[in-house]
Image (cartoon, rainbow, N blue to C red; front, side, top):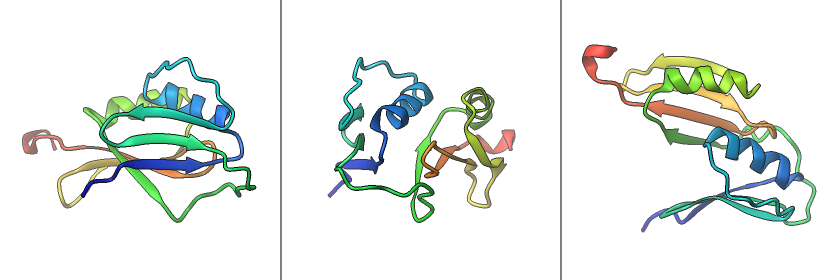
Length: 119
């Protein structure tokens, strides 16, 4: 079994999708106001509005993405005006994580696994 899709529900598909397209450097040409695929690979990442009102501040879930270099992404995120919740820090299990919020308040983790000699 594998995860087939991670979907963020929102009141504003275009706004949230545009944030993630900028975050991931993706230009898929989509401006659909109801549903957008951001990543369409083994695990899909989508933004969706099912017509029900959503409240901002999705604090009950976080999504972690593995990146090459958390420090580089941290600097880039600051240019996107993302709300930084926790700057990059090495965790006891060896991952270097940072936490930020998307425009709807969902907690997103970027992580990398630096070589031990770089920690």
